[in-house]
Image 1: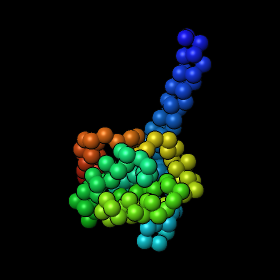
Image 2: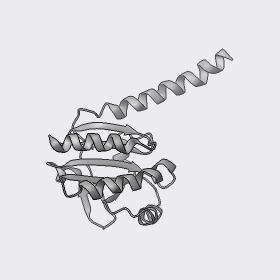
Image 3: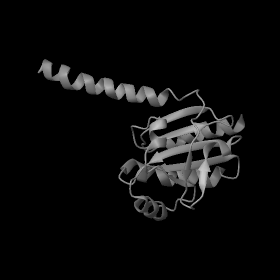
Image 4: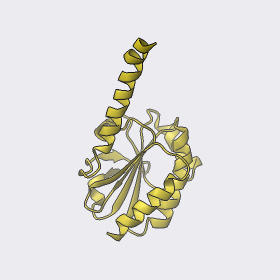
Length: 166
Protein backbone atom coordinates (compact mmCIF):
# COMPACT_ATOMS: atom_id res chain seq x y z
CA UNK A 1 0.00 0.00 0.00
CA UNK A 2 2.78 2.41 0.92
CA UNK A 3 4.47 1.75 -2.43
CA UNK A 4 1.25 2.65 -4.27
CA UNK A 5 1.03 5.91 -2.35
CA UNK A 6 4.65 6.70 -3.10
CA UNK A 7 4.35 5.73 -6.75
CA UNK A 8 1.05 7.44 -7.61
CA UNK A 9 -0.24 9.82 -4.97
CA UNK A 10 2.96 11.69 -4.16
CA UNK A 11 3.80 12.52 -7.82
CA UNK A 12 0.19 13.54 -8.47
CA UNK A 13 0.22 15.81 -5.44
CA UNK A 14 3.55 17.34 -6.44
CA UNK A 15 2.26 17.93 -9.97
CA UNK A 16 -0.87 19.58 -8.63
CA UNK A 17 1.18 21.82 -6.34
CA UNK A 18 3.44 22.81 -9.25
CA UNK A 19 0.42 23.82 -11.33
CA UNK A 20 -0.99 25.85 -8.45
CA UNK A 21 2.37 27.56 -7.98
CA UNK A 22 2.60 28.46 -11.68
CA UNK A 23 -0.79 30.17 -11.60
CA UNK A 24 -0.12 32.02 -8.36
CA UNK A 25 3.35 33.05 -9.58
CA UNK A 26 1.50 35.51 -11.83
CA UNK A 27 0.44 37.56 -8.79
CA UNK A 28 2.53 40.72 -8.62
CA UNK A 29 3.84 40.28 -12.16
CA UNK A 30 2.81 42.07 -15.35
CA UNK A 31 -0.12 40.32 -17.01
CA UNK A 32 1.15 38.63 -20.17
CA UNK A 33 -0.25 40.51 -23.16
CA UNK A 34 -2.37 38.67 -25.71
CA UNK A 35 -4.71 39.27 -28.62
CA UNK A 36 -7.72 37.04 -29.27
CA UNK A 37 -10.73 37.13 -31.58
CA UNK A 38 -13.95 38.03 -29.80
CA UNK A 39 -17.52 36.86 -30.25
CA UNK A 40 -18.25 40.14 -32.07
CA UNK A 41 -15.51 39.29 -34.59
CA UNK A 42 -13.01 41.93 -33.54
CA UNK A 43 -9.56 41.22 -32.13
CA UNK A 44 -9.11 42.42 -28.56
CA UNK A 45 -5.69 43.00 -27.02
CA UNK A 46 -5.27 43.01 -23.25
CA UNK A 47 -2.84 45.95 -23.30
CA UNK A 48 -5.56 48.12 -24.89
CA UNK A 49 -7.30 48.13 -21.51
CA UNK A 50 -4.36 49.60 -19.58
CA UNK A 51 -5.72 52.24 -17.22
CA UNK A 52 -8.74 50.07 -16.35
CA UNK A 53 -9.17 47.23 -13.90
CA UNK A 54 -9.49 44.02 -15.91
CA UNK A 55 -10.85 40.65 -14.88
CA UNK A 56 -9.80 37.74 -17.09
CA UNK A 57 -11.93 34.64 -16.67
CA UNK A 58 -10.88 31.40 -18.38
CA UNK A 59 -13.87 29.10 -18.86
CA UNK A 60 -15.18 26.13 -20.84
CA UNK A 61 -18.63 24.79 -21.72
CA UNK A 62 -17.90 21.40 -20.13
CA UNK A 63 -17.10 23.07 -16.77
CA UNK A 64 -20.03 22.99 -14.34
CA UNK A 65 -18.56 25.63 -11.99
CA UNK A 66 -18.01 27.89 -15.03
CA UNK A 67 -21.72 27.67 -15.84
CA UNK A 68 -22.51 28.70 -12.25
CA UNK A 69 -19.96 31.52 -12.20
CA UNK A 70 -20.70 33.24 -15.53
CA UNK A 71 -24.02 34.79 -14.40
CA UNK A 72 -22.28 36.15 -11.28
CA UNK A 73 -19.55 37.66 -13.46
CA UNK A 74 -22.22 39.14 -15.72
CA UNK A 75 -23.69 40.92 -12.69
CA UNK A 76 -20.26 42.42 -11.88
CA UNK A 77 -19.87 43.48 -15.49
CA UNK A 78 -23.26 45.21 -15.51
CA UNK A 79 -22.65 46.95 -12.19
CA UNK A 80 -19.07 48.13 -12.76
CA UNK A 81 -18.64 48.12 -16.55
CA UNK A 82 -19.04 51.90 -16.76
CA UNK A 83 -16.72 52.56 -13.81
CA UNK A 84 -13.30 51.63 -15.21
CA UNK A 85 -13.80 47.85 -15.10
CA UNK A 86 -13.46 45.42 -18.01
CA UNK A 87 -14.32 41.76 -17.95
CA UNK A 88 -12.86 39.44 -20.58
CA UNK A 89 -14.16 35.88 -20.75
CA UNK A 90 -11.61 33.61 -22.42
CA UNK A 91 -13.21 30.41 -23.67
CA UNK A 92 -10.89 27.45 -24.24
CA UNK A 93 -13.27 25.08 -26.07
CA UNK A 94 -12.27 23.56 -29.39
CA UNK A 95 -15.84 24.03 -30.64
CA UNK A 96 -16.47 27.77 -30.78
CA UNK A 97 -20.20 27.35 -31.46
CA UNK A 98 -20.78 25.56 -28.16
CA UNK A 99 -19.23 28.55 -26.37
CA UNK A 100 -21.37 30.98 -28.37
CA UNK A 101 -24.52 29.01 -27.50
CA UNK A 102 -23.68 28.85 -23.80
CA UNK A 103 -22.85 32.57 -23.62
CA UNK A 104 -26.20 33.38 -25.26
CA UNK A 105 -28.11 31.00 -23.00
CA UNK A 106 -26.57 32.56 -19.90
CA UNK A 107 -27.06 36.13 -21.13
CA UNK A 108 -23.37 37.03 -21.20
CA UNK A 109 -22.83 40.56 -22.52
CA UNK A 110 -19.15 41.03 -21.67
CA UNK A 111 -16.59 40.22 -24.39
CA UNK A 112 -16.08 36.51 -24.97
CA UNK A 113 -12.70 35.69 -26.51
CA UNK A 114 -11.74 32.40 -28.13
CA UNK A 115 -8.51 30.59 -27.25
CA UNK A 116 -9.13 27.48 -29.36
CA UNK A 117 -5.38 26.87 -29.82
CA UNK A 118 -4.84 27.20 -26.03
CA UNK A 119 -1.90 29.57 -26.53
CA UNK A 120 -3.14 32.15 -24.02
CA UNK A 121 -4.16 29.43 -21.59
CA UNK A 122 -0.60 28.08 -21.66
CA UNK A 123 0.78 31.61 -21.30
CA UNK A 124 -1.24 32.01 -18.09
CA UNK A 125 -0.63 28.48 -16.81
CA UNK A 126 -4.32 27.58 -16.81
CA UNK A 127 -4.74 24.09 -15.34
CA UNK A 128 -8.01 24.52 -13.44
CA UNK A 129 -11.42 25.65 -14.62
CA UNK A 130 -12.48 28.30 -14.16
CA UNK A 131 -9.45 30.48 -13.52
CA UNK A 132 -10.04 34.15 -12.77
CA UNK A 133 -7.47 36.94 -12.56
CA UNK A 134 -7.78 40.56 -11.55
CA UNK A 135 -5.36 42.94 -13.25
CA UNK A 136 -4.83 46.46 -11.92
CA UNK A 137 -4.77 49.69 -13.94
CA UNK A 138 -1.00 49.36 -14.46
CA UNK A 139 -1.34 45.90 -15.99
CA UNK A 140 -0.14 43.94 -12.94
CA UNK A 141 -1.86 40.70 -11.91
CA UNK A 142 -3.08 41.33 -8.38
CA UNK A 143 -5.30 38.33 -7.65
CA UNK A 144 -5.58 34.78 -9.03
CA UNK A 145 -8.51 32.49 -8.26
CA UNK A 146 -8.67 28.82 -9.22
CA UNK A 147 -12.03 27.11 -9.46
CA UNK A 148 -15.36 28.49 -8.31
CA UNK A 149 -17.77 27.93 -5.45
CA UNK A 150 -20.83 29.96 -4.51
CA UNK A 151 -19.69 33.00 -2.57
CA UNK A 152 -16.44 33.60 -4.50
CA UNK A 153 -18.17 36.53 -6.18
CA UNK A 154 -18.15 38.37 -2.83
CA UNK A 155 -14.36 38.09 -2.77
CA UNK A 156 -14.20 39.27 -6.40
CA UNK A 157 -16.38 42.24 -5.50
CA UNK A 158 -14.19 43.25 -2.53
CA UNK A 159 -11.01 42.97 -4.60
CA UNK A 160 -12.54 44.78 -7.56
CA UNK A 161 -13.75 47.68 -5.43
CA UNK A 162 -10.33 48.01 -3.80
CA UNK A 163 -8.60 48.09 -7.21
CA UNK A 164 -11.06 50.65 -8.55
CA UNK A 165 -10.31 52.91 -5.57
CA UNK A 166 -6.55 52.86 -6.27
